[in-house]
Image (cartoon, rainbow, N blue to C red; front, side, top):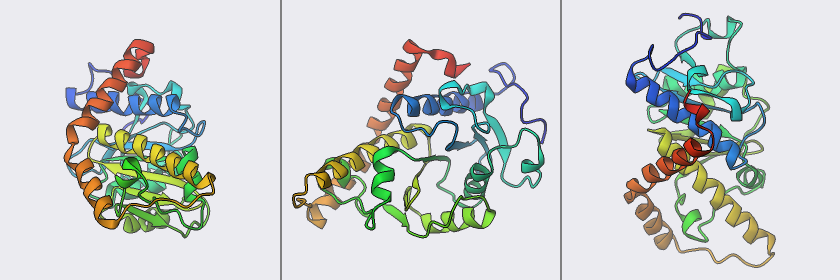
Length: 255
C-alpha cells in the first residue's frame, strides 16, 4: 500500500469512495455532538471493497471533532505491514477493526465507543438490555455480550475472539469496556448507536428509581423488535437530517 497519510480529495477518488468518506466523517462529528466520544480514543471503520477487507478508519489519536473525510486512513486487513508505518492507526483499533473486516461479513461499518449509559450498563453484572420500553425492545435478543474483558484489545487474537463472539449479531455489549455496533451502512450504524445509547439511558434511569421494572413479555418484545426492523427508511432519514444539521453548523467534516 502507499503512504497512508496522502491527502485524498473528491478529485482524486471515485464518487462512491468519497461519499463513504463523507458519511464516516459525519459519524465522528455526530458522536461529539451526542457526547459519545472518548477524547482521542475509540474508533470507527467502513469497508470500501466488495470483500470488506479494504476499509477506512480514523487516524491515530485525532479528536473526533476535527476529523475530515480527506484525512481518513485507507487500510487493508491483509496488509501485515500496516502497524510498522509511522502513520499507522491505533493498535487497539487495528486489532479490533482489522480482524473484523477480515472475518465478519456483516461488519461493513463498525463503530466502537464508550458512551456513558451503555458503558455503565455494560459494567453491571447483568448487562442485558431488558425490554421496558420501545427503545430497549428494539434490541431484544439481538445483542451479543462479552463478559471476558482481559485488558486492552491490542492483539489479533482478541480481535478474532470478539468477531467470533459477535457471530451474526450487529451489536455487542462489551463488559467492563463499552459497545460495538456493526451495520451495512454508516446510516444504519449511526441510528443503531443513537438508539442503543438512549435505550441504555432509559434502563439505567429506571434502575436508579429503585422500583421494580415493568419488563415486557417475550412476545411483545419480539414483536416490537421486528417492527423496528421493518422500518428501514427511518434510519436513512435520521442520518440525512443529522448531516444537514452538520452542514448548517460546520460542514468542514466533508472536506
